[in-house]
Amino acid sequence: MIEAYKKPVIIFLHGFAESRNIWAEFTQDYPPEYRILTPNFPGYGNQKEPPVADYSMEALAEFVQEELDQTGIQQAIFIGHSMGGYVALAFAEKYPARVAGLCLFHSSAQADSEEKKANRDKNISFVERHGVAKFMETFIRPLFANANEEAMMPYRRQLEEIGAATSQASIVGGMRAMRNRPDRTEVLRKATFPVLFIVGKEDAAVPLATSLEQVALPPVSTALFLERVGHVGFFERPQVTRRAVLDFVGAFLERNRIISKQIKSPASKLAGLFSRQRNAY
Image (cartoon, rainbow, N blue to C red):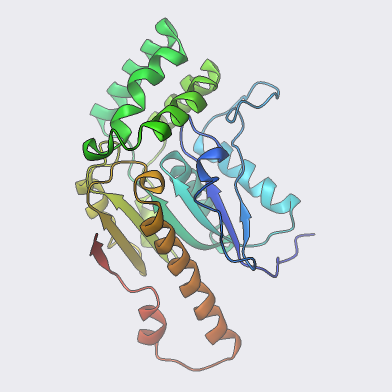
């Protein structure tokens, strides 16, 4: 039996070749009334577990659903980085009532283009020939904006170490799963929950133009556009991105407070809590 958890629940989903450790600093000092979940996806986080049979976004979404069930959580706010956003969208497609809010943190609802699919195939071939550690030497560096390369070196090393500790089966399986994932822009169009987009203007993995095509799709959305940020804003601009997430959660709590008091507010007032904003920092 699933019971609604009384505290606001925020579940942070890591990206490809990452682990829950990427959120360690970012989630520090969150309000004590928030419950924070940072699971490792199966096959990630250097876990000692049986081989993973299915790396698809749908299978990972089922893993998240089981995690929520086991902890007695009915509904949560999802913060998904890159592949974590793909998983959150797959979850929202199947379990929309369990999503209180969705943040696509350098992520996209679009399927891979043919060019990107071909690039993933090249990367799979490289990993199979040269191994994971060699792949990480070139995969991680472009995730950061050029202006941040020197200052972000410790975080680059951290991501390289996390990636190198991931099994080849998980790296190859993850790339194939991302390559094969379907377009889920319809999930955004039909979203019954607010959506926050965090976008790096120098993100090579999810280009600015890709994000611009999606930010107006949800009925209620907010977008944060960041100068001098690539694909890892939680490292490159931690204070600004953390504030954006906290404001997003705060607006959700305020909306619930209004509803719980049965205050009849105009739709425009409620929508204003999650108004479409396009801020550049």
